[in-house]
Amino acid sequence: MFFNKRPWEKDLDTQCYVIGSAIVKVATGEMPADFLDFTIENHIVAIRGCYDEARAEGTEDKFGKSVRRFVKRGVDVTGSHAKVSSYAVRETIEAVSDRVVRACISGSSSASADSAPSQSSALESTLTELDRDWFLRWADGMSERKGKAALFAALEVDSEQEALEQLWIKAILIIDHDCRDYVQKYLDGQALSRYADYFTSDEATPWGLISVVCGLNQGSLDEWRTFIVDDMKGKLGRFADIMVDPSIVD
Image 1 (tube, one colour):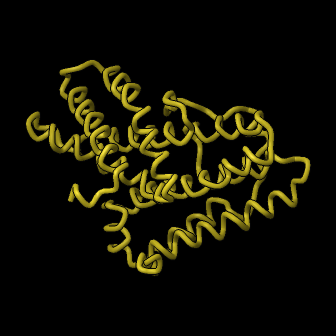
Image 2: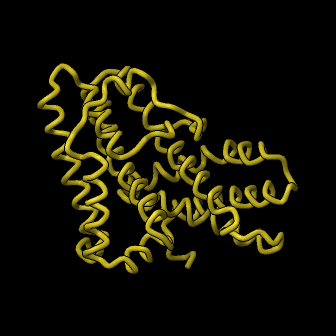
């Protein structure tokens, strides 16, 4: 219910509803394709404010799912009159939601699916044990402990692929919450810029983001990598425990 939403969720719902409506208008041909880009640009500052509020209260792990849900609601409501279902434009909803989330976290409204990681960030990445296989085991562990149906319900998805996509977004949010601060506090502005370059790219993944962060401090690589990996394993493990049993935070 609306009255149970956090303040930032209420504003986010309003902003994302408009974006969902724009998806319908483009899908029906009522508006040209660039109308969707224009709408996102016009609302991204307000949505970024919602993310900042969520981050301040420690609920940013819910942000990605909320963006997707509210954009979908805008499509469902306005599409019901135009005979456009959210299922028919589901790929657009996913792409737009992911773009909005990345843009909010990076602080740049120009984050797009065509972005690519810079050569410097790619060259300075350092492989860690938190690779793709580790994250797949992390996701599988939640599914086994909570049950696939219950996990799908918690993530508000209908398939394993959608579940993985939502978990990757959540993992990136968790990593960004602390790692961005670590880079800002302990490294220079160029390191932060390289971090942002990778984060806003279409190739960004949770394991890739950790690798990039680890590679940014070449001066004390081993100590830095150990610190980042241990810290992220703890934070991601805590998130998994909460996903399986939300009551542990009560």
